[in-house]
Image (cartoon, rainbow, N blue to C red):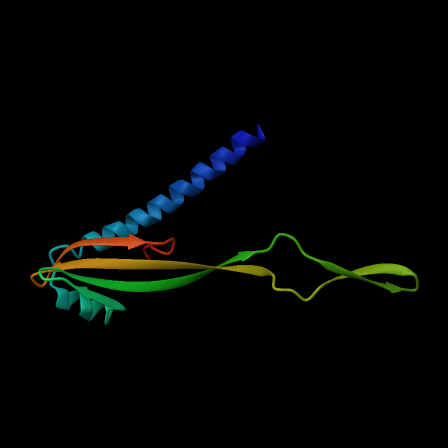
Length: 125
């Protein structure tokens, strides 16, 4: 029973991630056929550019931090009148996970012809 529950939770989380990535894909699809200048005016100066004879690759990097609450806490005992009391140790109450996304656009003759993205931070805002 427990293994079925874990499988169901995994599928639900995968579905949520896929749906968010699909939204980002939809945002990027709108750029196909648009001029390079329009992209740079909207997204800003690219973080990296690679030029070939007939193609140009423009890359943008982004990073988002996700904060996950910790589920376990450490306690330090102290005694008053022989009775133990427990105070939480001064510790961060969350874990920070950095999610990074690299989005690359392919430019041919000044027009966006393709795109790709890599990383867990590639989500539509």
